[in-house]
Image 1 (cartoon, rainbow, N blue to C red):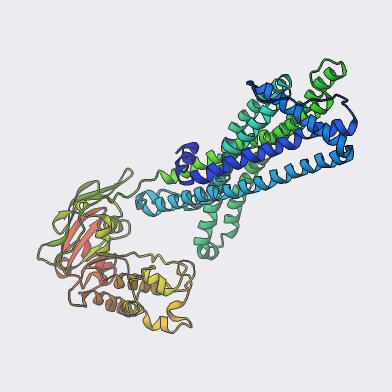
Image 2 (cartoon, one colour):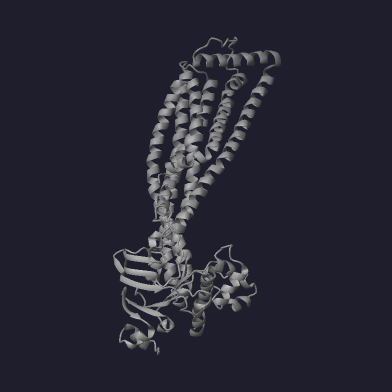
Amino acid sequence: MDFFRLILRFIPEYKGRITAYVLMNFVASVFSVFSFIALIPLIQLLFGLSDETFEYVETKGLSSYNGFLDAAKTNIMYYLQEQIAVNGKTWVLFAIGGFVVLMSFLFNIVSYFAYWVRIPIRTGISRSLRQDAYNRIVNMTVLAFSKENRGDFVSRMTSDVDEIDFGIGTTLDMFIKDPIQIIVYIVTMVSISANLTMYGMALLLVVCSIILYLGRIMQRITFQAQTNRGKILSMYEQTIGVLPVVKSYSTERDFSDKFSVLNYETQRIFNKQNRFYSLAWSCTDFSLVAIIVLILCISGELILNGESAIGPATLIAFLGVFYSLIAPMRDLMKCTFGIRKAMASLERLNRVLRIEQESDSVKEDLVVRHTDEPVIELRGVSFRYENDDVLKKVSIRVKDGEKIAILGSTGSGKSTLAGLISLLYSQNEGELLINGKDVRAYSINSVRKNISYVVQDPLLIQDTIFYNITLGNKDFTRKDVVKAAQKAHIHDFIMSLPKQYETVIGDRGTMLSSGQKQCIALARAFIKRAPIYIMDEATSALDPELETLVLNELEGGVTKSTAIIITHRVSTSLDADYVYVIDNGKIVEEGTPRQLFEEDGLYRSLAVIQNIKL
């Protein structure tokens, strides 16, 4: 997404505020010009630089802009001349001074309200951008997320969005406020002296060209700086996640040294960025001051030699307007750097916005039917992760109300198979059928509503136990939560806590044991009351007695649930109606536990190793 296309995308939403911002900046610029034009008679009066007598000029019939402007100047001087004759020079001096102060006051008031109008535009676009990026993350495929660095993701959502937010503000100034002020000031300067204006603008264009070149370099440096910031956040997150392991293996020094190298490298890049920024800014200020001095010297020489069409008072007013022009010109150049930094950050954020999304167009909703036909069936399913074949021609049939076990050692493809059935991944080959129909005919959301999926590593949130069981679903009552916790055999433990279900369990459930975490994850599955359960090593941290009690809960209720138990323990598979043994991504054995015990295959070998007897 191009940075300027991003801004244009939000113009319709904020067109009222943008219009008000344009008008207010125009009015503020006019007030500023009036305050400097008023200096001409003030200086002439104060220093007695002009004894000219002015006559009133009729403006009717004047057709040219210059003619009307000259008539207006003459009539203003005529009016001041009359006031001096009536009230004296002192009264007129204070009157002009009061007018200058009033114009300055009005300029600042209108500028404030212009900024007040601009703020919601900038923050609103940033809010929409953050929301868009967050929605992209929530809807991205699990496979795409597994390839990304989570710390760098956080950096893109925070630091990079902040840079874009600043860039949006500078862009609004660059395309609205600064151009309006520049145009008003240049028109005023041309009306005073076209030749001096041409000299000044020619020099300013040279400075602008240099700044644009420096801005391109700044964009490259900013991209490096933001990338390293993402690496630092990633290392923070990784270290916090594995802190118990770091301490148990006494590797604090190694981790600290590794972070120190990255930290120094990041400091070096940010030093380079800030020094470059300061250098460019200093060069800009110096160039602009040099231009003012050059114009003063050239015009001053002409005045001293009597070759200038303007007088000293008019020259001072011209320099005042030109000096006012410097502020928006300098801001415009500053905007160039801000936008370059924002473009670099947007380039990084675009990697989030372009990540593969789950597609869930209008499709049929899945309603699991209770029939004698297989509820779930895999026919020759293969799955490839990058260049590695994880699953190879896997075929499985799961009947309604049946409890099957998928048994295999670590890395055999069990969890990938569970992810495929839950639609976290899409198979490369073969068919996945539910109710005898290709799963792609159903909406992803409706399929997942019919499946309770529990993984080995319980993914808990730093919130209350109640929230972790319901995941914020307001349809569940406290009675539903208690019933689910009782089925997961965790209710008594929860009631022993001081705040019971309102207890905050810490980041990722750090206040709970591994078994307690799994029980809360199981309660989350039970409260869903889905017709299909997929348990991916979901009871691996439970003792055998508690594991049996929990798995027996799947057979409770009016309708027996369909369950797929993923395990590496033979003991967990003994109560299954049917067992599939997977090895190196292939189904190598299948049958009832008793049938597999009688065969001299992998199932029996694992049972012997685990000291399991039927």
